[in-house]
Length: 374
Ligand code: ACO
Image (cartoon, rainbow, N blue to C red; front, side, top):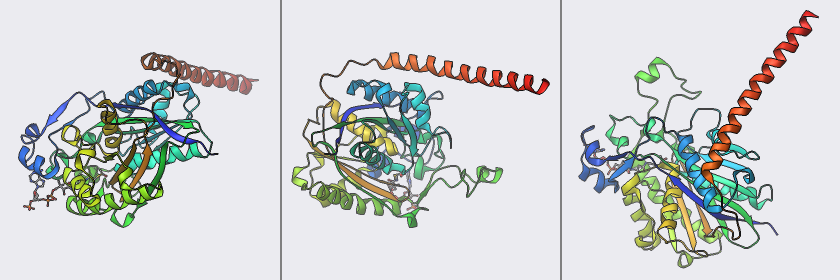
């Protein structure tokens, strides 16, 4: 029988710096009242200069591994979902792999904007279901504050920085990820986009001058799309898991806008008290919002082994999707793990590997030189 992908670890990391609506109102023509009533957001976290998508992702990953009691060397797959990667390449996931010392892991980034964590969760779960890996790390991480135009009130009020991670592990019992629905509609790709910096519009003086390296959004259209697809995706994923909405204890939605979530809950006839909400404190952290909300729900004791949960999101692409999962617990009898130590080992290991690579290049050059002279 195919193994199931149990969620056995979870962790989050957010920057310490809080940016309130009141502070934003001193930067652009807006008000705390406007932002709160239109979005539900009161404040968001902003990465400091030395924090990046990879550093937040690493922190969240180590915390998730500690909850799971899993050594980084046992991780076989790392997926980082992000729209604000460390670089265009290499993948942010490879940087995380190096920093946590996951010596046996394949690592890649996945881009499905705010729906990314749903996509990544599905991909990792399928890898476990197929038997190709036993332990996987799924991370959603963003520093969208670096991509926002701080003079554009349409977008700068919405986004925040942060990261969240799940550990998935193979288990025989039917639990963990039970079903998923992934959808896209590229005809809406212009509704939420960062136009320049790719092959269509490589970076140039003009692209910088015209502000094309910032997020551009048609908020009204995204809103209309979101309210439609949240309900659809939830119902479809629940049906695919052979469940009904009555079986669902919690919905953990992408934290984009309180009104979108309220409308979806109303049309699902699902009580808002059972929708996890924290966007008032973090804003829209894009692909990180679902794992961050999950971590907080777990910390608050709102998730119990056996609970059926829907993770549902939407975003640029356009993309949308949902995953139904049965909440698992960390596997019992696992060792106590030491994330801080792993970070240190990984740093030493990485420095040694870099040194060895340099020595190797030097020796090769010397040998080549000698051969030429002979
Ligand atoms: N402060 C004050 N006024 C503002 C602000 C602001 N921050 N932003 C816009 N306005 C003004 C507009 O200029 C407009 O004025 P006008 O009528 O004179 O032209 C008015 O407020 C109404 O603007 P709308 O865009 O219609 O406002 P709306 O009620 O739709 O709220 C919002 C805007 C909050 C952006 C909403 O449309 C929304 O949340 N959309 C979804 C966005 C979203 O979720 N994006 C993330 C997707 S996930 C991802 O992939 C990253």
